[in-house]
Length: 111
Ligand SMILES: [Zn+2]
Image (tube, rainbow, N blue to C red; front, side, top):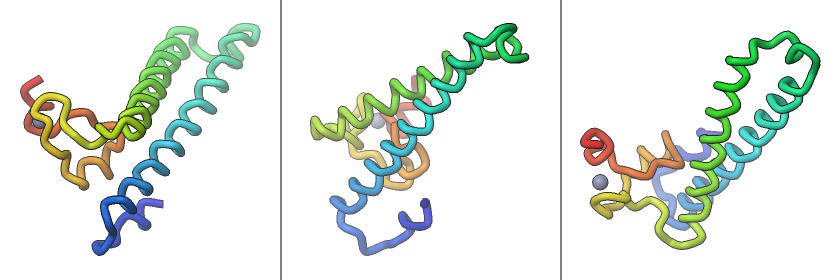
């Protein structure tokens, strides 16, 4: 699906739709993963998984779901794609790589 993002003559609205699609797909994938982890955690002996690994994976997936949901909310609020610190637009290449990015690389490095 990233191949769809390589067009150069796309409008920013088209880019936004592609990024929204990526975020929605991420959200669905992470949610399915969380469901799977929850099922493992409830099985006897954690279905053979190490409980601490399951806990760590669950925390990580919850974090990813939160970041994705926040990015989708910023889209609906019209603040998506702006750095949370310097308020400059994030480069499209950064958003393609990390659709839920909240900071430009310069501010990210300073954090
Ligand atoms: Zn910045």
